[in-house]
Length: 149
Ligand SMILES: *[C@@H]1O[C@H](CO)[C@@H](O)[C@H](O)[C@H]1NC(C)=O
Ligand SMILES: *[C@@H]1O[C@H](CO)[C@@H](O)[C@H](O)[C@H]1NC(C)=O
Ligand SMILES: *[C@@H]1O[C@H](CO)[C@@H](O)[C@H](O)[C@H]1NC(C)=O
Image (cartoon, rainbow, N blue to C red; front, side):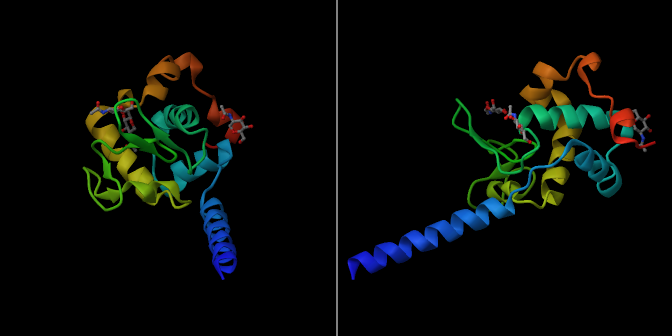
């Protein structure tokens, strides 16, 4: 009986893990570029900054969860921080989101929150941008690579 329960628990856990993995998404560079531009209306002027930022924060994967030295955690594509912007386990923070919701494959909430962070702090909020994207020479030429006008 105990073994059966254990088996069921293991089965349940693997289902959960599987569905969690299927919920996450890894974007290709141009797919993400087009989505940010066409679906989310990101200003073309800053598009290559956003792509560079995302590539250095999460490598374009929505499932990235990092623990920071100051005890906060960073979630998803934009590595949104739990200290201020969202709240662990329930909706809250300045964006009014549950942090865990930033890990799924729907990035509507992530983009909305990232825009608010940008409005307040600019790109310098993101260590990945500051370290690797501040110099315009390091930005990808997306117009050429992804063929948008
Ligand atoms: C995009 O940003 C530039 C530079 O800040 C600004 O001049 C332009 O009006 C913006 N375009 C749109 C559509 O918001
Ligand atoms: C980023 O993701 C790609 C696959 O999309 C992988 O090949 C690469 O090693 C990853 N880079 C880092 C730094 O995780
Ligand atoms: C904690 O660290 C993260 C990542 O380094 C940073 O984004 C955040 O602003 C820090 N929060 C505080 C309150 O220091």
